[in-house]
Length: 449
Length: 154
Image 1 (cartoon, rainbow over the protein chains, first blue to last red):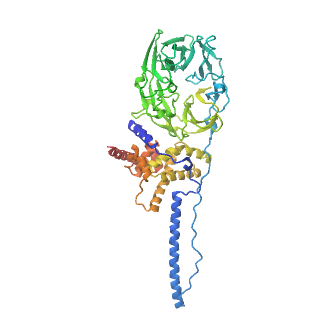
Image 2 (spheres, rainbow over the protein chains, first blue to last red):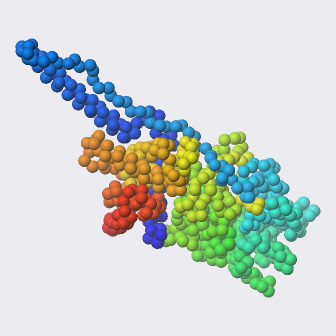
Image 3 (cartoon, rainbow over the protein chains, first blue to last red):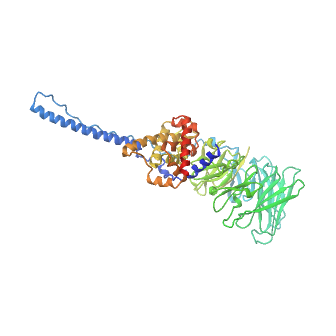
């Protein structure tokens, strides 16, 4: 597909998706309603019947005339009696099985090599397999964890005991349960853990810490950005950038160790990204930090919660809170950002292992490859027929399926999800799916094997 | 898809409906015919399911299109119209869309091919197979349609 074709496809999808759909109840022919073909058949039959009646009337007329002629002329032959008019054939009722669309082939869709991070009772997070609601992992703080790029490890901040006790700890455990939980970093008692991001090679963690109260003007505050490398010879808790008395907090975004570049957002009240910070980590342990002002005078900006890096940390995306525009940019250069108008209002996530941004548009899941984005933006539809107003919640850790969140679960306090299997390219998407309930929310995808 | 059940078919149909319906409206400029064609295609699928569920949209589109063409022929006879025109509401709705305005410059046959290619993403081979024409015919139709749309856009 050349650029012209991509642009036309974009234009067709953009415009034709505006065509309103009929109510769901009309997607199948209502009981007793005839098709155009049947209606026309009936019309033709009616016309035929009327013609037949006229023909018969003419015949009768001729016969009566002949009979009177016969009466006058007894040598004429007698006329056979008419026994009735032809019956109108009624159309056969149209097949209209009232079959509710439910899941099928569920076994083929679930893959218990994979699972999810979910919110358990008490507000903590834990893990589950795809096919079962059973919680199988230890509880951990839902606000500050990160799943490794391969989906097999979780790093989490364990809150400290307060000013007088032990400080917060950066910990790591395997979702497969085949290794003990490790404490990587222990903070001072007055420090809190902030956010965490894994390096793209899974060999290191970028994390933030903070002290004082939150927000601009919130009093004394310091925030740090640090790195931890899992290798014994690596950096173990090295601070690479600091904010003092600014009120800003770091939220780690990505760390591409292959180019020694770490990035984070600086945020304050409102949790929108105020600055995009890039830190070059030099071999001699010197660090060159730069920050770009990402604030807008006219909009609320990009919430940090929407900011995510592709699994190889080459690109970052964020969704503008006001417009819903998806913005994406190369890791090193926020100024090179591009955007897709209004597309991210129902979620925007990177498909693992790709440069494809997944997002919902009407009933369609789009997978737009930023490497192939033309002048008109991202293209194209991967799956059509998603439940209306569903949002994109997570990709399976290997990108082979996607979880959609459907508003209005059937049980009290439950949320409904749809797991949709994807193909290796958009057009080969099978669309096979299964609907399942989950008491709490799914927040991330993991991989057991 | 030889072992497809009615339940499975219903699920697949519901999933494909939005895209195929919109494609049919864009091709026929007639919502009633589009819906009726899709109803017919659904029932056709219950009786004779497609052999595989890849590209289900393509299967539904071509079956429904075939049905709508019969519907068009009959509707013309039924209504005694010399030419089918877009109903007012569909015309108004499509007229608001850039693509809708460009499609109105094409014949129904051209629209059905262009929409299949650029909206449903069918390849020229798939369109040729589905509509029973040669690939060269599809290619030529796409080229002519684009030229006409380009002239209309100027």
